[in-house]
Amino acid sequence: MGAAVDTTQWSDFGVAVIGASAALAGLLVVAVSINIQPILANDTLPRRVVVALVSLTTPLVFSVVLLIPEAPASVVGCSLLAIGLVCGSILGVAASPSARPPGRTLAEWLIAPVTPAVLLAGSIVLAGVGVLTESLGGLYWLPVAVIASVVGGLAQAWVLLIEILR
Image (cartoon, rainbow, N blue to C red; front, side, top):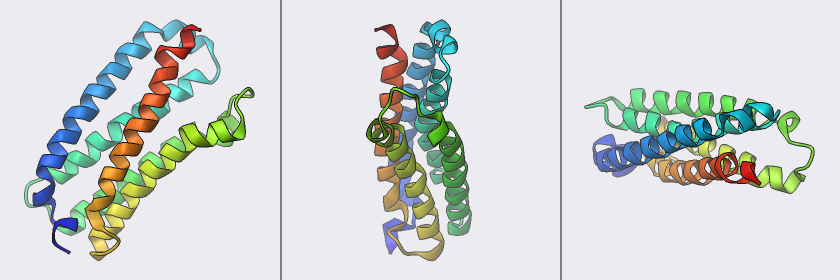
């Protein structure tokens, strides 16, 4: 399966994702610090901060794993599996049905934050299992995770920076 499990071929991807993820997470921290009072005054917005921060920093974490020199496939696969499960657990608690604001419809809640969270965590888990079993497309699931991260994280950041001021 070659490139699907060979992390040496993913180093440029990892470097690009680390830079983008760090920049977006930094901008989120600035956005939250600007609006910290209204965020803390609202019951549901602190959870959005968690969802956004985890969404935007998870690719940074899995990209570090891709850049470990000569890491065995078992280490990469197990690390990705663990990252996906931890990310999924945190996002699952932060975006749980009990956290859905009363004014949001089920469809709105499923579109953001649930779908991006499931895609983010699920694709990392699939990448980890794929590397361990040399199947399922291996590391080719990681671009899906990056896209879900950006879409989900920026949707939450938009609310924290722009929508909160309405």
